[in-house]
Length: 555
Image (cartoon, rainbow, N blue to C red):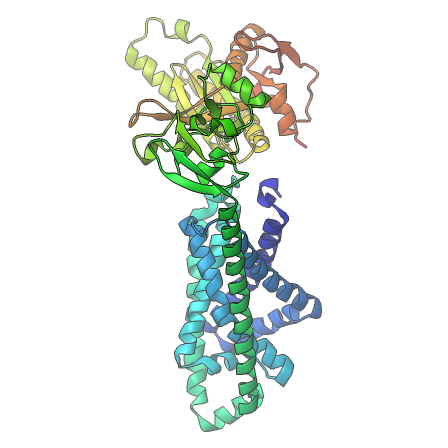
């Protein structure tokens, strides 16, 4: 499984793991309820099969451990938050998660607890009769929806960074809507049937005997257990909120006041960088490199409190010198205020949300493909402009789908060539996507050339440069007219590699760095080092005569 799925600390991994166990249980439980739409035997048959698994000692231990662990980690995460402000999706998931115990505790007590302590036969019919036709049935139906929506949000937040999730979301939305609808339909159908049976005094006595219906004393005891369990939950939630409040109070007492020129004044915890303080308080603060001290776009002029800051360390000093920063300039990502500070942001996003710092740019390590048609000028000499445009569009229609199918995006068209970037979750998947795209482009071109030859037109040859490196993706241009594009040395390297393919008579030059990150294990005996114009270091790259013959052997 892709490593991106398990990023984060041990608490995150445990929360995901326990959540998957509970989501799987809920999925089959809801399918089970939905079978009541067809026949009682189907419903009870699947329930017997589920119980054989979930009520095995080992599986019971796993299931209830996952339930307690998931709830405990949720409360722990609340206690460790710096603020209760959060995105809507996260807030909705938290609220739904806190609502679940209010009904789930009662459900567990009157089913599993009743079965273990009072030997109740907690078949689905018993559960339905217990709820029908009062408000309890509607509360349990609401529980079903709350559990399902909570789980779907968690699943989406976990998988949204994978390359395949976005492609399957339209289909999964249908499944997500179908499951609770199916379950509720089955619940209502079976409920009406069994309640009609229960209205018959003779059948009622048979049902009561079959279910080993609890006595009034047993119900009273179960209500007491339910109330105690709910009290424990409220105490745990109160403890989590108390820890949150205590930590917040402690941070406030160990805090520092920061005033932004032409901006707000905030109080933040000591130990945070000025950039982190800005981000934590929702203050727009440009930082294209993500706080690594390389891009200098987060720099500020410290107008008051500069004396309390330590001198710039090597990384910060080098970056400030490189841009000829004025006196008093510091990098917000490198300084950690301990005394009151007044700072002026040199690069402040203006013009509304579309120019906010998060959309101006981000630094990523991605694969870049530079492609150019060979002999375009000589081929089109003497042709009408319309014929040239028609040929180019046919050419791009033939090869661009091969790029986009592998996760690539054409950043720009340049006459008879293009620049594409593979913006995937990580460098490894980007490198592999780039290799696959180069191979597919070559195959698509071969098919296009067959059509050209059938028309009596000469074949088209191309050159491609493929490299992996650091890029800045962002909006470049005047406010309101900025296009999203990429810049960085990696673009220049890919372009220069493409330029070398003509002299070598090959279709593709792919850098060694990309091959290594992609885990390529094919023949690399032809690797050569290239001194490229505008590139400060030699670039090892592998010439490939025809990219369609490139064996995509990866570790």
